[in-house]
Length: 246
Image (cartoon, rainbow, N blue to C red; front, side, top):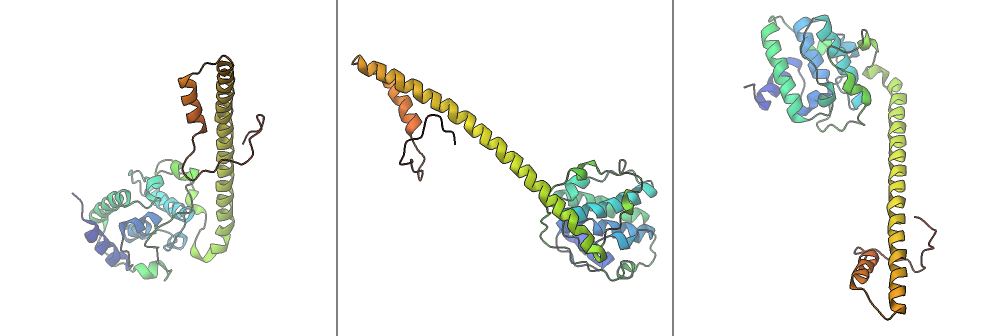
């Protein structure tokens, strides 16, 4: 069994001189990078954004972590797609693993976490709300990241350069929502037309029976179902044209 959340957070805060109060905050990737820096001392901390707040920033941090694993021949897969969602269980399991790695490999040398990150802010949000899922996250793993993939300099000092990426993500979300809405509208029209055909058939059959002085209870029940409404739904004052679809 690994350490508890309280024990892990106490160790993490003491080692990195941060003030995390939830394991989920590790999903930004910054803490994992600096833990590895305390072991090897060669992590490019200027490329690690300790106060990352959006998923694309988390992924950039994990690219750095993947490069560390690759350069030091660490075979442990990094479940980036799950970790960046900042769920407690996924990050707890990975933090437990990284603590065991640290216990086995840390040489006891002095470590200055604030100096290594050059005083960069570490105010990782206590409640993480990633901007949006990204397709690229699923393709990132310790063994499949592109060589040199961690060379893109993303950091707090270049926040302006990340803005276009955020805009692209929002536009992609909007396009996906528009496509989904279009599909829902087509599906609605498809089923409305089917119901309209049934309504016409029932009406024609009822009129034919009435002309013969007959009746059909089943057809009347079908009409009740067709004309029933949900509570709060108002039937239009004007009848709907037979060729009109909504």
